[in-house]
View 1 (cartoon, rainbow, N blue to C red):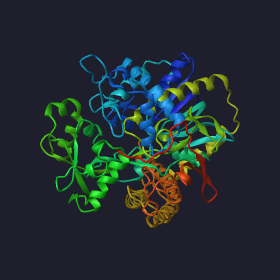
View 2 (tube, rainbow, N blue to C red):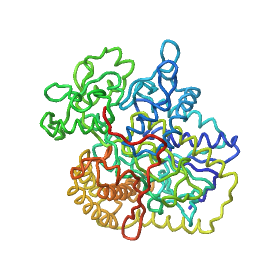
View 3 (cartoon, rainbow, N blue to C red):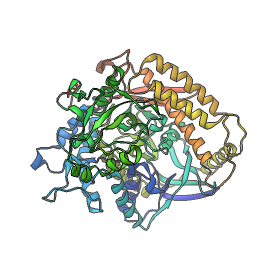
View 4 (tube, rainbow, N blue to C red):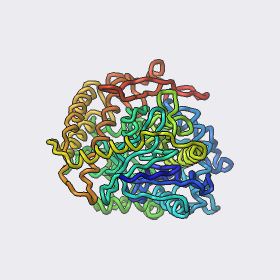
Length: 578
């Protein structure tokens, strides 16, 4: 086993991870040693798939926007579960991040007067989503990666899969990973660790997420005794392509697209008359599934999936080519559909994890519901600060990743300047993890990890989708518990050392099972419908009993739950009407 020491280590290489590494380096004037560790090549991180844009109040004098209005839209969109102090940080810092990204080379679409163009997104009162065509995530990643490569004190470790955090008491000192190219095990020891490993929507089979979004950092934190927050809230994006699940950006509706049922009706008028297709995602997803349940959808013969249409035929073809070129490319390539001539078949797909590792407002990982864990931060989708509450507004995710990438990078750098490593147990604990990796790689179990994964997909797709009920969730609870027991007897068929994806995927499936368990347990306990969590037996939001965050912690034989109040700063709950 190779032992590697760094001042700051960033685990994860999406927008939050790249930003954290850049700002840790820059804030220390390149005096600290910084490592960026990714299970992929950096530019294959899922952030490249973000399409629509990033939110921020850029020109309040010309469009009558304000940070207070952005905050109100976000809090209302969250179904009042967002911590309002965190939302205020988001809306205050987001414009600065858009300008920073402009300075490092993101090619924003612009108006004739030179201003960055901003388009409408669901739940937003004012068009405030800055965009680079419909490839915003890719262009942000490219610019951040170029900036990172210019920093002399940053070392990048591509294709290193992390398996376990090293925690000693109230401190996290790093983690253990294996090099995909060789299977050599490495222990990364840090003064400051930032977890930025993204979301976990791969617990579902029909999802907009890449196969790499398996919640690795979140699952490792949970197993290390770190609390997770609000994991029952998983966002379903209304418009995913049938049958692949590829994201069809909300920008398609922001640019004027319509949703139509089998009768050709523009059905959102029945559900959100003032916002129509630009209602928040939870409302649009439920509306689509209601149309399907009531018999006004269509069925894809190959996959058996029911769907409705996203109709762009009334838009100018030049507008599609200028602002939605990737959507046109995707639909032609995948279905031979030109969206200027034919409607696009879509249905809701798992998209974003609103919950995650419990952090404070500066991204410090929490040891309990109220105490900080030393030496570790979390940023991006794996972290729950919480700015999204029960439902994220589109384009706030890239703002969150950018804002807390910077905050955690600077916080981690300051910590690394003043602390010394103290754990005498690090090497022994790392060696124990090395033996676990070897044991799994060379063991002779009887269970196929892929059969377990397929069974998990079936459970989650059937019982934890847009609409939920107690009977189904309790059945899911039993099945997931059974799958977790089977996972203890799993085997890795490939015994090779070079790019053993079978070994990596077995670890990933174990991570998904742990997180699916927490999602389901938390969902069963929340007796209300709020945002993305809609339960047949409890159809109403219950502010009296459930205006609070779910805190889930691993305990002997199960999950222990606590609840903490939502932080209110002036905006009081009201009925969500759009």
